[in-house]
Image (tube, rainbow, N blue to C red; front, side, top):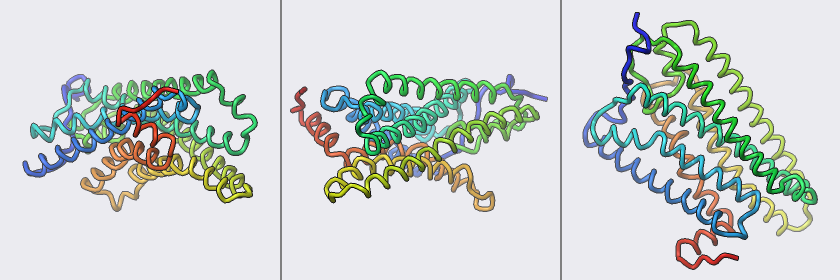
Length: 310
């Protein structure tokens, strides 16, 4: 029986069969990755350079942009390389590093989106306590907790997954390394330990989801009690970008992993994995920039070279 020590590389799912489609996918991925790098880079630069944007909401947005940058740089470059050079190979250690990075940035994104929901809740439902509950030290601690918990989660899952003996070949059904597809190569019942870890992680994801839903119920109730239409519009405008980003992130990821097996197919799995791993990091900057006037103005000043520190 062969095990993981005898596997030097894995074979990723090819994005296309013909050379023309491979080059088309390369160009598409290049365009998406450049858009994501530009959008998230502008947000990071605008928030870092603009003193008037040094608020909890924009501080967490900067952290979200960092996680989006990391996420897009984890999966897309390897897919572009494979499409350009007509190969499917990823090394054993490269797969482990990619799996760790994917888990790390996705976990950080979920934690940060949950914290940003709390920020909007305090801002609208408890405005008098905003400075106390979300001071600079509290924000730094929450961001550090998000990144640290993401690191720990990614480390545990990666170490446990790659400790499994593998004897079912080395072909993965995704264009990047992911736990369920590595499970399929296992020949040991020790994967039950990893299923336990996944169950804990799913419970935490569900807890974040419940917290976000409960918070938005309270937010909408508070907003509807605002007497002026202008005040209601202003309050809604600060929540809509976050709500759109959360909906995009959770809906694509949930459907990709919990869809009925009867509708599963390699092509559909490829599209869904692309949707939840590549599209949200590229669209998040656009969603926030279009809906937030302060950020839009700061990005515009940064792009035109007229940004002045206040």
